Every structure is written in C-alpha cells, then in structure tokens.
Length: 391
Image (tube, rainbow, N blue to C red; front, side, top):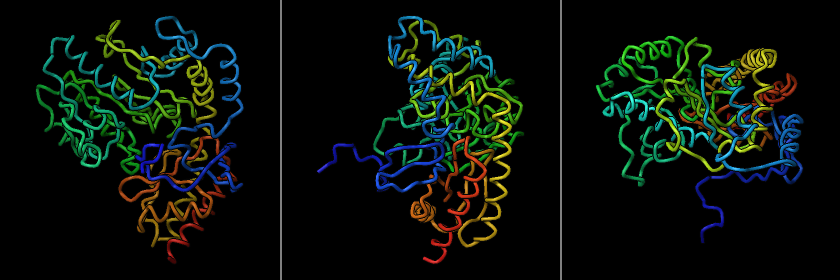
C-alpha cells in the first residue's frame, strides 16, 4: 500500500523535532551537527533570533493578500536586492524551480519582443540541476530526470561544463540564452572558473544572447560573496535565487536587468503566493544580515579554516576521500568509497551531510557556524571515515 506521503524520496530514518543554530535535535534526544542546512537553505542556522523576530512580528500583522495590491514588504526586499546586485527589477517566487520557469519565459519573451522569435534555444550544461518542473528537467535532459515524463519542453542544448569550445559549437541563429550555475551543487560541487564565466559574458554580448545564472544553491553568501558570480567580476542578465534567501522560509526570486525584463509586462507572469508579506519580511531580515560586508568576511575566514581542516582529513584518509572541492562554505568531499556509505556513517556519528553526483558528499553548513563547531564537524567526519575504512 502506498504511504500517505507520496514516496518520491528515499528518506533517512531520522525524525528531527527542533533546531538550534547549527544543531538538529532528533526526537530521541540525539543532537546532530548540521552540515546540510536543509540543502543550503538555513544560511543563518536553525531558529535564528532575528528570523524568529521577523516572522513573529509579521505573522501578527498580515500573512497574505495577493499581488493584486501593493505589498510594502515585497517592495522593501526588492529594493534591497536591487541595491546589492546587478539587477534593476525582481519577481518573487516560492522556490528555485519556479524561478527557473520564469527565467526561461523571460529569456524567450525578450528575444521575441526584440524581433527574434526564432531564438528560443537555451544552452545548459552537463551536471546541471535547475529544479523538477517541466522546463527545469528539459533543461538538464538526463534519463534520471526525464524518463517517462515526455514529451519534453523543446529548445535546450546541453554541453560539457566549462567547455567554451562546446558552447560556441552549440550556438546557432536560434540560441537565445545560456543558463549556468556558477557552482554546481547537485552535480558534485563543480566551480566554474572565472575565465569561463567571463568568456560566456563576452560571447553573450557579442551575439545578443542572454546570460542566466542559477544561484539557487550557491547564492546568498554561500561562497563568501553575496552571489557567487561576483568572484568572476561579471554579471548576468537574469539570475535565479531561492534556498538561502528565505533562511528556511519558502522564498525564491528572479532578478533581472531592465533590458532583459523588458518583455515581461502586466499579465505575462504571476504567482498567488510569490512575494507574500510573511516570506518577504523574513527574506529582508536574511538579506540585512548576509549582505553585511563584516558577515561575509567571517564566512570567508571560516571557509579558509574549514577547508584547511578538511584537506588534513583527506590526507589522513586517502582510502576514503580523494579531494576537497568547492568555494566558501559550499564544499564537497569527493569520495573513494561510495558516498552513500560515508553519509550513512556520518549519521551514526550524529553528523548531517548531503550526497551529490560524482561520488561527492556536500558540506553546506550554516554560514553562522562557529569555529568550535567546525572543529567538531571534522572530528565527526574523521569518526565516519574510520567506520567506512574498516567496514
């Protein structure tokens, strides 16, 4: 008999009932150090006082009205995002998948309105993940993602990640946009080089192609910059944001330049819940903390410390781990042993990690994690590695 919850997840037998900072408390009382952050969501940890205050204050006033009316909290968060980024305008969603849907629509509408209705194709990359909606799975087009869900939304071409020659070869007179994660998360914590992102920007400028960055997982301070593309010194035309921006509350956004968004006029897109007062109040509290240069400086300091410790862990356990990869506090350990075994052993050590492709485990701690907690994380990873090595 099917469970009352649709069984689309292979869930670990853990039942968390409370979160405190970097810790999750299981119903049996065990305390797990959380290096997953709900898959890069809880950037400020669990139950951060500032977020609790923001959501409590707003919940006592107004939760939802509709985008038929002006929403001051939405305006305030949009203003903050515009002030801190390349963008001129923002549309709020409830998730990264919804952000992907709008990014695809926006890019195609832009080309249509500019007199190029044939420019419907979007170049994407092997190892990418953009969500699980129709557009998002078509963009990736792996058997795991698309089998049985045809017919697929047409207009996507996939090329190897980081291969500029392959991008150029894939471009035709129908190419309207290039969509890329500056750091691939699900794909195995693969970092696009600064040179590659700069080359994509130049190529798009030369050909009238829009550049879309998917920063759903790598954005909102995760890499030590507010958004990961800032390391390369380039900007996109459109950017997808979610996960960390809500700090645990369902919230996403599409940021765009005025030019890229020019086709999106009244009636071209909408969302019942997107940009609701409750979500935007939380999002603004997140942004006010994470966008602070002092906060980001601490992320970079902790990231350097953590990476050094993880490099030592890899050197100690060459039969379990192969390398450390990633940027900031978006890190991955490429495993020699099956990554599922390492994740399971980490559970036994009361530590949360997240599997990814390429036999990698993702290390995505809250950006507020302390130095002592980083040391404890490495101790527990060491314990898990010993278990895997001797099993």
